[in-house]
Image (cartoon, rainbow, N blue to C red; front, side, top):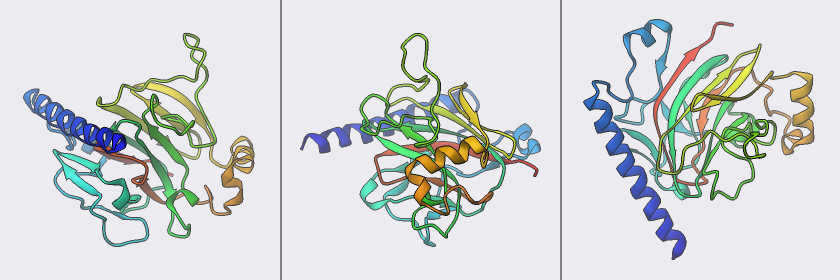
Length: 246
């Protein structure tokens, strides 16, 4: 009963925050889930239009389960038990990805990239940018880390790994850059770390992790962007990507 109570409160918080922020943005003359003329000229592509689920489908499926819904201009996982991971229609190699997320109480989600259909699950091929409530979520891998592989350095003020996330109910901004030269994880303008896919350091870390037993993990240099939808409620908006030239 207690768990259902917190889930209901979390969903209500996501809905209220989405409505409030949307109204505030429109009052300032900007509309969520749109691109400016400058962004379009720079090559940015909108991955979610705020109105429907076009451009997304469940992993290894042509459809999308009802646990994913458009709510108040957000792409929301409202029922993790009937959602599953969703992926983009297109595949991407190098790119800059930006989005905002709003996580529920004790919520856990993630952004995976270079996901291919050859794996048994999205995470069997695609590295994951972890998203979660850093205060109440049970997973020790915190928000912004590359799951089981990289984490930010210690914050001198706390002695704990750097944490630039905002509290549950507030929107957080993610910037993920994936390129052959360097990959970067950034939350709310704070860079956590960088790494090089396929480098000796990266491969050594993979070998020592649970992914070392997955022969297809991080082997493709091109694939879908995936959003995790089986660990908690979460809402996304302003999802945009800029493919990088090879």
